[in-house]
Length: 379
Image 1 (cartoon, one colour):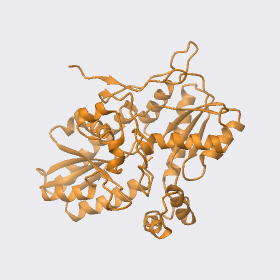
Image 2: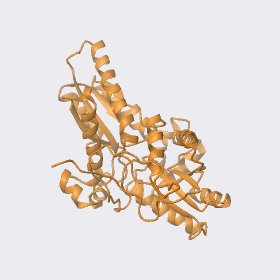
Image 3: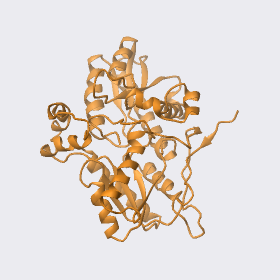
Image 4: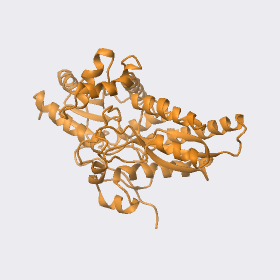
């Protein structure tokens, strides 16, 4: 049976003329005084005391209270603007956040005041899930009500892009480089025959949330929840696409679980897996943070700090691959996907993305309740 490739296509009316583009993200604190107020925003309605928030705040405080996510979003915004200008697509790019300045309400008001009425939205998350898709749509709806812009400002969110060349091509490059680096470390340590494990890491979510996501056909095909299946499909593709990965063991693992320890979250945790891999005789690990598009706080803390320390304690060679960031192929690919929604002179799309990960990913849902960790920079 031939492999099916099917991406989400713009719905009727979504391919149109647009006035502007919104880069929508999570936000992060910009100083020590911002950390607790930011975490209160992230956990609003959950009744978490400041004492518990302060435990998480240590991650930010160790970095001056500043999350790198805001600067990274500004870099992505500038890169998108340059790519749009290169293609003579004259659409201004705005930036708005869920949990810190610039908030969606302020950005929406500004876009409307600037004369924009139809806005194409790029959310900084590659995968489909509640916190990476549905929750943003809920935020947009709430902000339109609060700003009294319902019926005046139209927002259309572009599709997920985990299965597109925009996301996979940079990660192919990063995986190949990571394998070469770990092999070099092992050679320098006199362990040229040491076994290497590839760990593809993403954000954990509560198991109950993951189990509610559809469609059922993906659960049946992969034998697991849809959130995990998306990541497994990308990992399978990357290993098959990178010749240096041939024959190497690999696994999807998770990071950043939080909340009540009695609540089941997706496992295994990356630190637990590194310990198991060391006991199983692996000599090195390549850690690919393919659940994220930038080196934000969770990547820096959970991987560059905790996972690296675990590997060092167990005597394993370790390499953490980059995230897509502003890689030229990522930026160009995102604009290609935007082009699917932007109508040309004859109503045709200005550009098209390219699905690389096989499968029918056309009707993913994320409806399942809260799924973002306390740290929260997964999207």
